[in-house]
Figure 1 (spheres, rainbow, N blue to C red):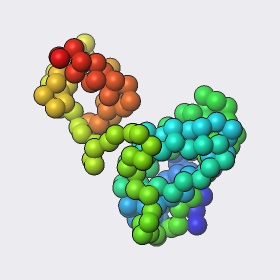
Figure 2: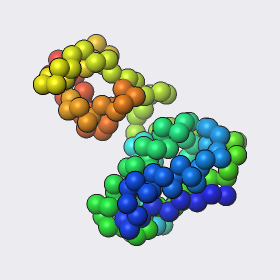
Figure 3: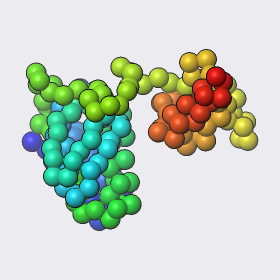
Figure 4: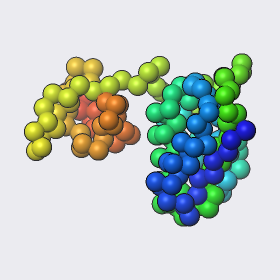
Length: 167
């Protein structure tokens, strides 16, 4: 079993490197256990869970990209809240998803597509950044569109606002 502890006293680059080393031997999709070590409820939209204080929950990461996004989000939360430790992530090296494992799908009121939708970049000249998703064109901030074309929570809000304006 490989465990990664995320806390504010480890810099974010080190957390990313530690995650890569800790989970180097896993095959995806991978089942992991997230354990909240704080007195706060953590909401993780990337895996569609609400993790109450002291609670553990098993989730499945379909790919390394999802794992990296969650680790990055948790590192940011740890630094913003100065939490030491924030969360422990445990996985069996070379495991495969076990029957009964909770997939990263909505269970607490979140709504998500089976696979994240990707935007199509319409215009990017350094000043104006225009993208399209589901026939709706909008102008999110550049940091609201990930490298793989999926939207961050801020990008999803910009998309929702554009849909509302469109009527």
